[in-house]
Amino acid sequence: MAKPLDKMPPERQKAFQNLGIEKTDRVILSLDGGGMRGILTIQLLKQLEEVAGIPCYELFDMVAGTSTGGIIAGLIVRGKTATEIEMLYEKLIIEVFHRRPIGNRFLNPPQYSKKKYRELLKKLIGNKLTMEEACKLHDTDLMITSRDMSAAEETFFTCFKQEDGSYYGTYKDVLLRAVMESTMSAPTYFYPLERFVDGGVTTHNNPSLGAFIEAVSYSTPRNKSGKREPSAYSIPKITVYSFGTGATQRFIKPTKTLNPKGNDIKFWLDWLINETSEDASNVQENTFRSLMEQRSVVYKRYQISLDPPALKKLPNTDTLDKKIYGSKWLWDLDESNLGNIDMADMTHFKLMQVIGQQMAAYIMESGNRFTKDLAENGKDILVTFSGDIKRIKKQMSDPEWLDNFPA
Image 1 (tube, rainbow, N blue to C red):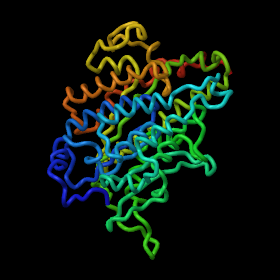
Image 2: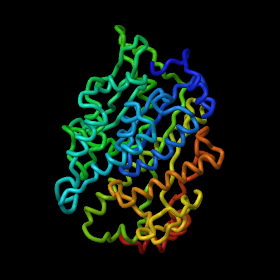
Image 3: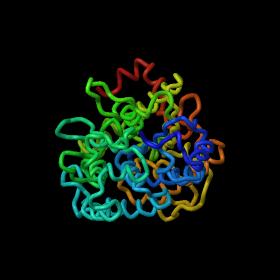
Image 4: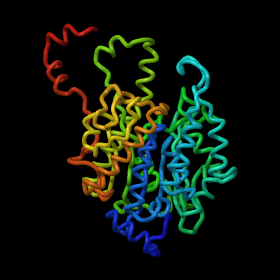
């Protein structure tokens, strides 16, 4: 059921107008995973709330999140503004990425303990607050993703309000803080929670497509005849806002894949953990933009690649720590600063915050103002890396190069 459309408060009507949302649309917020890079997302949400004039928990009918996005989603349904979330998030992330005194994460137990994080969540969310109770606070439907290792499938922890005021969802009665712990239990970083690990290891690190499908097709129970009751989310009256955490670029030279430094297993495991979710996110975006062309949904994606060409599109700023980056200016960052910004590397927390602030400024100054997809001709404006296509085409058209390449 989500928020009532026939009795929409004037403030929400104004927010829809400011953001270019059709007044009959249901609005879904989707938040990517990405560890401490979620601070970038929060900067965008702060600017979004300023444009809308109301907080996210009043604006959106449904909030969906994976990993760090799941943490933010849980705080939104709990009734926190983006500014409040920023303050709480930093405390949570510091506790999350408090390193254990152990060695290599691929050869030993997880690097990080969730004990302090669990205690802090208990204080922020509530000891016994269930998903249903949280959703009731502001009539906000919720989906948080995780991976069920035993069943070898993704799990969507969902809770949807029905027309009669009741709530539907297999896990609607579980503790919200348990779900928020499940979604961020990234393998090699943390121990699983029971059988659940970080939702980012599924194809739903960007949970937008999963949220869309759940809302349209699975948000209501089946009736006596076996058919599902009509959903409040109906095509084409849906707008999806999707926020990334910055797409990491590893800047790996082809020769390094032939002879990785150090442990080969570590190299490829590290690559799989960081890159698989990026590929899955691209699939989600391509699917949604295909639906957009068919006028089946309005999709607004906000993402940036963490590489020099993308950052040079943003307004420059001199707020960086020169001791860490060699310069105070954002535009001076190069591949050595930006290559593979790990989700747990708190030394880059301030950098990600600054990039988020400058990205928000770009969205405003470019005239986008969160009214449309941040893309041109179906491609993200601020996602600039596309590989060495020119060089690759030349090499792979040369028989001599192919015959001499290591086999």
